Image (cartoon, rainbow, N blue to C red; front, top):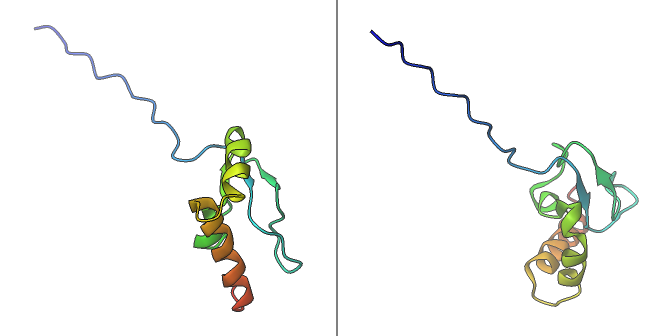
Length: 90
């Protein structure tokens, strides 16, 4: 009887890029500063709104343009973080 080989393990791509850059607003009382780079992906202590503003470094130019366009998703995410902060959120 021929022995069947076990299927080779598939390499699963990571869900998020390793290095990301924060493109959100900076606040004195926040550890996240605009254009701060994080080597190990999105920090766990980021709020849900802030997490949307961590992007792969390779997308920075594209995202910076989107942030200047009123009504773009990235602009809305940016404004949501400002509103959250102004309401006394993190």
